[in-house]
Image 1 (spheres, rainbow, N blue to C red):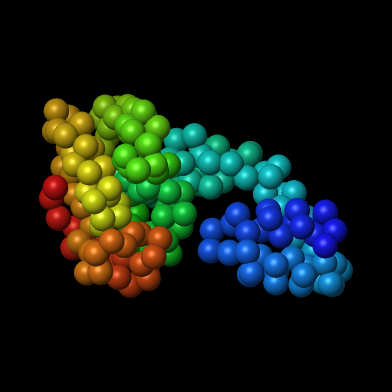
Image 2 (cartoon, rainbow, N blue to C red):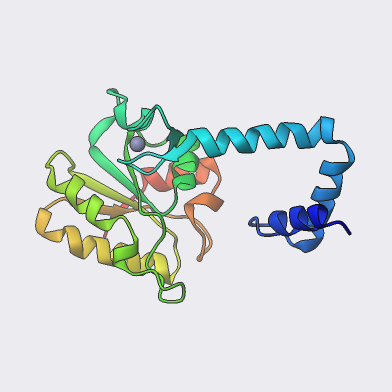
Length: 198
Ligand SMILES: [Zn+2]
């Protein structure tokens, strides 16, 4: 096997959800018909590298020239309602559900002793600062329903208690140990509608 092909397979196999075998299949399909697949992927990757970033305010994916992002600057959205998620991708899931019209805040992870993620590694200070600015009345925690998600929710509820804001959590009609990114739009919409106080 050539070095270039081996390197491509190794790079692809590091993607979430792709093991060595599927990475190999993907790599072979790419190089077999470069004009069909590879050229387009190269361009898309280059564009993503050059133009994509996370919004400084909410953490959602946005382009370099739209920061703060469209979700943060849309005047029709409700400034009093702030939804806290773990990952930028969770914002996409909630937007797709159509059940939320407030603002967002992505933590970029959750408290996890196993992955050595403590409060300092998350965007918690930025969250406290946003809430302290005074417009937010309710913080909706859209976090995973496992132990780490619970710990993160508890930490945020404690952190925000002195601020006097309402802190709520999604009412998941979901199996335990799942998160926003794995939920379908309808389930998410219901979970937002039936949120509970923490
Ligand atoms: Zn934003």
